[in-house]
Image 1: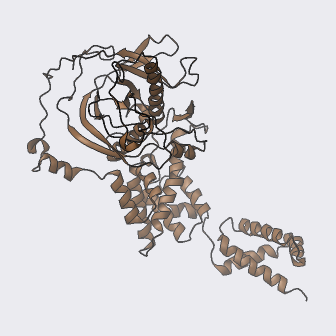
Image 2 (image 1 turned 60 degrees about the vertical axis):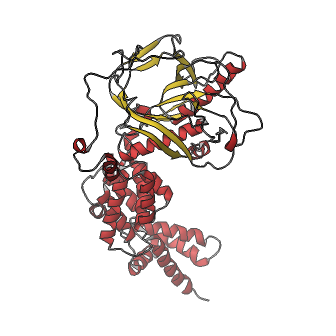
Image 3 (image 1 turned 90 degrees about the vertical axis):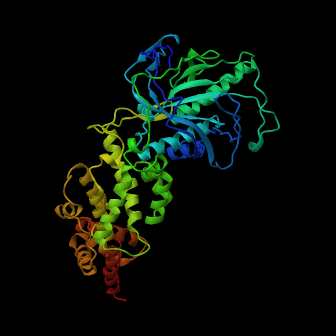
Length: 521
């Protein structure tokens, strides 16, 4: 594919455009929920609205049309048709200097010539949030099956967004039958926004382009076919908060790429011989297709009885799936527990998704002084230099040790607070010892024997140092509950925090009842 541009040092690009690896597919997805994102981050809803899907205009020039249409209903599944999936050479990265004039750019050629996978869709999307939703769905899918790590901020996955506008008839806004007139001459051209590397950028770029192109169309100066880049930081006074696109090149009406076969690369033929199998290509793919995210969620929910929310968190980090299953297997083996309902998977899931993930994230984002690598740029959170990727793949606590810890909790050997301390030690300090060995070395073991607890409570209640509190308790009155709370703290301290909280309170009530019953009537 021959063309000249500074980011293409060879002057041509090797691509499978005419003979793609796959074609005529589809992906089901839901629009990206801005409300859900704001709720997770504890921020107020910015009231961004999404459009509803409509039928595809097959005569369109290939761009992704966006209709900014308000709808407050629940998001439903939408199907995006995939035109083709192909391999091709990556180009360099064009960097526009926001300080200098918009006509000056720099080129980073480090990635030029590397192979990439390009997924080309049909123009079936109708809103910015639909575009973000399908990118997130594909990102999770590719990450789950191991195609890429899905880190958009690092360039592992990028989105080239094609946006165009089209007039619609007022009064025909029902999603099922939006009517489109024939585009006026020079209007509705596809505008490509290159190399978007976050969902927030995809939404912002699409919404900016809709407004920009609409204003130009109303002024009878419609945009032509062009390629633009997106700026998160402000580059003009008109947009003090950033989030606008600037042109990097015009494409013209038609481009002759002068296609010719690459003479140094023979055709790729996938048959029984090249696959090393007696199966044809379709049978080979069917047999070797990995478990897809929806299938994994369904299996975790059905086989282990965990909630779908927990399963969704686990599959977001593929190594966590094996760690979860290994931990459940270890815990059940040590507990010899086969009853139903089984609380072990739920316990493992909660400890994995909350406590262990928190330690992994902290390990990845904090330096030795406790400073976080979390960065905020115009309301968009991202991570700067990480110590390692945020994944349990880099956890020092593996499934066997997490499962043993869960078994100790279920057996009542350690309390939840003890287990949290043990987990931190296993993660940061002692990378080899079992949870039981760490508990023994620190003297952590729940005291649940009632006779032992009664003796412990009696030693505290009848301690001469607590005589004044005991006398006050014997008198009764409104301060009795405060004295009881004081004694609970003393008993817990005397047990080094090892007393079973509920049983200890029961034992203390028994001792205090004897004290009050021995008073003269």
